[in-house]
Length: 119
Image (tube, rainbow, N blue to C red; front, side, top):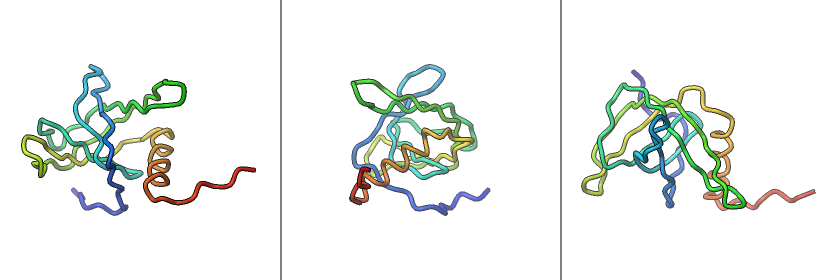
């Protein structure tokens, strides 16, 4: 199985929670993202080769939350530099358009590019 990264990932200095989509319980934090995958930082190791139903809850305007549901396969998992935490890499399966919008918004935000001029 090919597990090397082909697309540049962007580190997130502010972590967003990741939830189990079925139970709605938090399972970790979003470590970085790409169009095809993500890294999860968790207090428990993830099983490699298993599909997970994940949910992202993204703060939106007006105090609302935007929910993005994902199905992802865990490709690797190892201990984080922080004791008692684990990093796990996931490959996304059919990510919704909202996930692509999140990746692009984070890329623009953290790359310090000027915002496009409004018409």
